[in-house]
Amino acid sequence: MIDPFWLLFAAKLALTAGIVVTASLLVERSGPLLAAMIATLPISAGPAYVFLAMEHDSGFVSGSALASLAINAATAVFLTLYSLLARSHRLAVSLPLGLLGWAAAAFAISRVDWSLP
Image 1: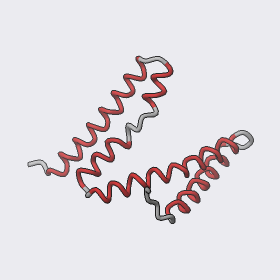
Image 2: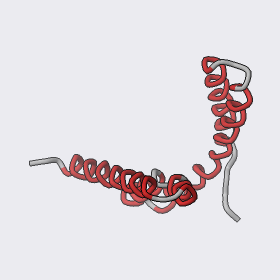
Image 3: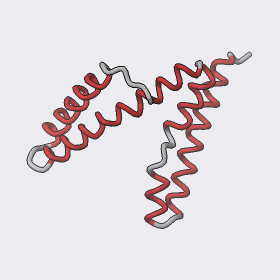
């Protein structure tokens, strides 16, 4: 008998892969504007939140979504640092410093008690 955990795990993998492959196929067959819109959809976060909702209460899911929203600012810090450094430095310098900036921003953001009005 197969353990229910592994069945659910396999279903999650298949569903997530199916969503990503479907989005990729749509991008290949569409024009540049529509492709950009499809490629920027939150196709990885969507299934993750569905799986979280299946396993956790609404408070946990809403807290996770709020933290994900806030941590996007750290991604902006990484992108800014990396793009500025990459113009004049090699990858071996730009990437670690960008990631260090991301980690510092993520640490600072995680110290704030975020809430919606």
